[in-house]
Image 1 (cartoon, helix red, strand yellow):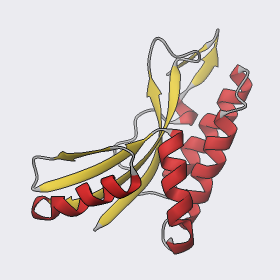
Image 2 (cartoon, helix red, strand yellow; image 1 turned 180 degrees about the horizontal axis):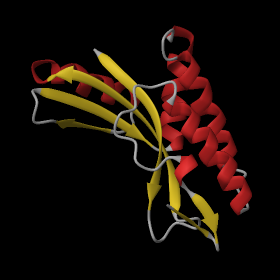
Image 3 (cartoon, rainbow, N blue to C red; image 1 turned 60 degrees about the vertical axis):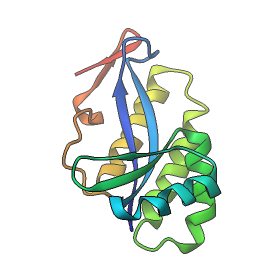
Length: 139
């Protein structure tokens, strides 16, 4: 199968700085091989499996705890995704110490840098398009 490791700035009114940093790990497989994703989910214990409308299924893990645990298991075997894996580890660690707008700005720049390691074509909330002011980030 195929997979993706990525990080997003997710907009929301209830978030302290107007955005939240979401880390995700997704495995893709044709629907007729969905059973494999279900088995993988049972083995790893995180996330959920969903079917898309294009004959594909996804096993999705979001959140620092699950993504960190699974990436730590996969890290020794990663070749093409090793660089983004390291960035995600760094982002998860940095998220723990965000205590100011400036801390969040630095974190958002790191999130933005992950786009350069992926084939990001639909990214909307880029750090260079955001301005932090008055406890929020605005486009």
